[in-house]
Structures are given as C-alpha cells and as structure tokens.
Image 1 (cartoon, one colour):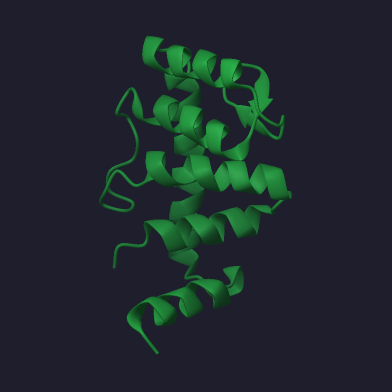
Image 2 (cartoon, rainbow, N blue to C red):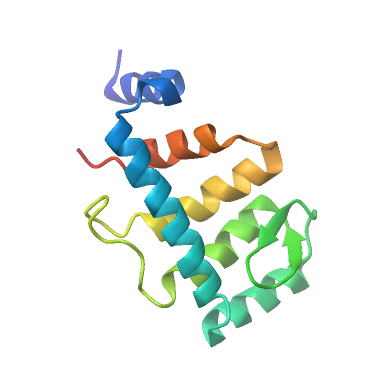
Length: 133
C-alpha cells in the first residue's frame, strides 16, 4: 500500500469517538474562534469585495457567506469565508501551531452545511485536516 493509500485509509476510517479528548476540546475552541474571526473579518473591505464578487457569480444557494446574508455554492462560500477568516490575521496560532484555520474551516463548514453534517463530523474533519503531529 502506498503512503497516499495509507493516509487516505486512516482519514476515511477516522471516527469522532477515537479522537483524543484534548483534540476535541482544542477543535471546539478553534471552530468557535474561527467563526468569530470570520464574522469580524467579513466587514473588512477585502472580504466585502470578495463577498460581492461571489454574490455576482451566483451559484446554487446551499452555503452561507458569513456576515452577508446570502448563500452560494460550497466552493464560493468557502472562498469568501476563507478570505474573511484570514483578512484580520487573528486566527489561532498555537492549536495547532500553524495558521490552519482559515484554509480548512471554511471548506469544512461549507461541506457540512451542504451535506447536513453533525458537530462531531465537523470536529473530526477539523482534527484530521489540522493535525500536524
């Protein structure tokens, strides 16, 4: 089995109940912080410009663009929310020790909204994408 196949298998078989409790708590903090930072950033000029662009592009009304009261496709919502989440550069830096929230959480939340995923599924996805150990 190749390295990619091994990694894909580990990700596909990961379950919320097998996550370390510390990882779950950190993920909850990262998610709440990420949503707060995204909402704060959503009113900044670059985020407003991107949100307006996304609105003009249209798309299926599936996923929320934070702070702008409209929905669009998962990809476009993740794009707009990613810009808003990073524009202030306030995202958590030590859990994990990277700026992993703005490039991962918006996509996770867009997929969660479009597929009606649960909180534990969102937490599992975040832990898997932000794990840098």
